Length: 298
Ligand SMILES: Cc1cc2nc3c(=O)[nH]c(=O)nc-3n(C[C@H](O)[C@H](O)[C@H](O)COP(=O)(O)O)c2cc1C
Image (cartoon, rainbow, N blue to C red):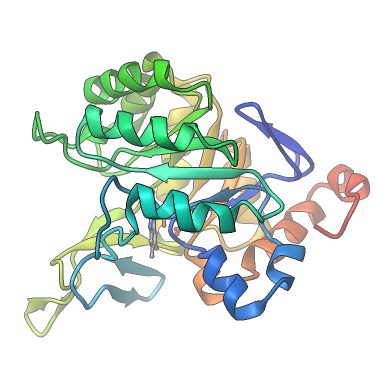
């Protein structure tokens, strides 16, 4: 896969570097740094923080823990809810110079359906990412841990929208490739992985995080991401957005080489909000054809 313009489930992208959901707040960045953020936007598509049907306050603090090569977060999906997002955030995000992917999560097929219909009705939205790391209130099972639950959810959602549906896979299963195959069988247009790995940091004999446990991300998960993307690529023919611990062009190159179509930068953006710009430049440096055909610096 080249570092130049690319197409991801029918969406034309200027290059293969996008953001990972929940790790780059484009609205806050614009508030802090002004229009420069839009003019020099580091991603070729913008993936929103996951939204849920109703507003959520998120988890009790503390919400973050640092490990030597990773962080653990238990942010808990704070968001304005679908209505608040669609009326307030979406118009602001529509100003970004790239296609918008909206990430949604719910706890039943009915709730997911409502979200998909509401988001799909908006022209500003290019695609919908389904965050399936949540329990189904009817079965009690985590949807994304079960190939059959994932397939059934996609079968319910597929007829509701013509926009691409991307399934965000959890790494917390023995065989993510089986869940990816379920997503593909149900009609998904793409999968994205990896989400964070379940983690429980301890401090003075007690769990540190207010929620007890959280999700591990950053460099420590990179080899896990490479394994899982490679397994999923062998199992499905729909495109893959690969992510997990990407900090350099060569890390992005590795994910493309094992089967990803695009690469998302997540935790790296917290340390350096322009990490994605540097990663793209490094990636292009590894790909002389893309470097010479690049029409702009980004
Ligand atoms: C602080 C934080 C918040 C996140 N929020 C979301 C989210 O709202 N929805 C989601 O699907 N993934 C979320 N993620 C997971 C990332 O999108 C990504 O899958 C994961 O962090 C692995 O990539 P990385 O190692 O490059 O960060 C979050 C990750 C972090 C660190």
